[in-house]
Every structure is written in structure tokens, then in C-alpha cells.
Image (cartoon, rainbow, N blue to C red; front, side, top):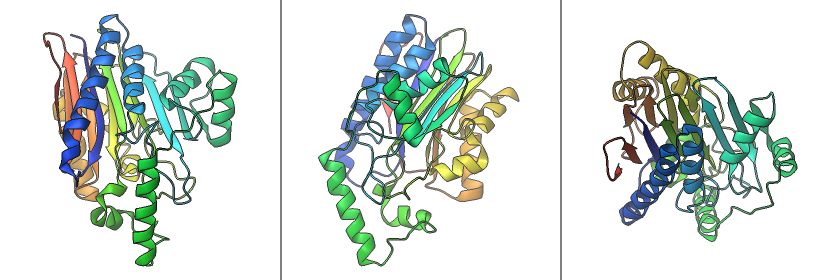
Length: 306
């Protein structure tokens, strides 16, 4: 059974009028991936699904990525093949349209797994990725409003208070995106993000950390969303696939992974999507919302929600 699931990020929508647009966005992305999956490639399916989300300014990846404390974009992305354990990732990259595609090139064209910052940008240029500005007017406006709130409260240097900040200003935790697919032969997982609003310059979350926010092996694949430091500390994506190796299906493993996050770090921290090597999909969260959509054999239309 072939299957694919995508997420548009875990968190809280204060403006619930955005929810139908977000659901439409993840639905569009899963259909983009499904078209590639029906041609036979989970790798192409994951890349295309994530690209669709990166190109949608509603989501915090590619176009519409959030800004660092000093008003810049630093994006992260990763992709991994379960059959071979090949993986590629970029961290702190800027000036490109689709970080997930650069991550795939790292996997396919180098012996490395992770390229960062200026090195990642130089690599992208060498591979023909053109200059692109992913900053949107909406993100600039939000950045200014959030900075003003923090400065008025005397909390510009907020890096030891990120959990508290997210509780007071849920919009700080924006929507990382990801996709996981199974093509009948292998599972592939991919994730992309602009990070956390007003993050410390140079901060890297779980997305490009293989085993942290992105992982795939012969039994399952996972893509995480939420507070990246939580997923890193728990090696959450790898841990979730280990649960499948112990006999759980994708749904049970997703729930077990989020239970771990809640146990150690509390609610409003994490979400996860998974596909196992039997084609089962799974998703779970401890936040109020997490947009998702999935398709598998026998379905004529995606199931999508938050």
C-alpha cells in the first residue's frame, strides 16, 4: 500500500479564520506529492509535497519563513531515504526558494549530510539554485509587532524563556512543514522550516538534525514539528521509528512519541507525522492545532484537518 502524509506545523491559531486556508494548503501539498507517488517514487513525492508548502506563504518554510531577532531569514531542511539511510540537510540557509531541494542535492551530490550557512548558500549557487528573497510583507509586519511587544516588556534577550514566550505569544511558534511517504519499496521523510520567530541568530532547530526532526529507515519515517529543542533532546524522529521497530504501527508510534514529549517537556511543544513500511499513516500532537493531510491507496480524496 502506498501512502503519503504532510503537516503544516504544530501550534495554536489565534486567528481561526486562517484554518480553512491552511487546510487547503496541506491538501494541495499532499495531492502534489500523491501525483509523484503514483509514478512510483517516495523521494520525488516528499520533495514535491514539501516544495508546495515552501511555496505557500501561509507556512513557515521557504517563502513566508519567519525572521530572526535581527530581521533575517535562516531556513533549515532535511530529507532522508529509509532503504539506504542516505540523507541530506541544510541549516541556516538563505537566498533560495526551496531549501528541501538543496537538501536533496546535498544527499545526492556529496558525501556529506549537513551543510550550514554561507557554505550551504555557496553549494546551492554551484548547483544552479538562483537568488531568491523568501521574506514577505506579512512576516515583516509580524516581526515588527513581536519585537515591539518584547522590547516593551524588557524581554528582547528572551532565549532562556522560549517556552514562556510561546505560551504568551503563540504566533512565535510558526508552522514547520514536512512530508513522509511510502512507495511500496521504501519510506522517505522530509522537513523544512524557517524556525522560531525572533530566534537567536545562528539557532538551528530539529528539522535538519537527522534523528531529531527528520528520520527514515527500513521500518518507518517521521517528520516533527514544534519546539525544535524538544525533538533534538529526545531524538524524537528516530525514537518514533524505533517504536515501529518494536511492533507499533505508525499511529501508535506517533502517539507514543508525543507522550514522551509531554512527559518531559509539557504540552504545547510537539507534533509528529509518520508512515510505516506497511503503508500505515500516523499523526499526533500535544498542541491545540497541527494541520495535516494524507492519502493512501483506496482513497479518492485526501483526509485533511487540524
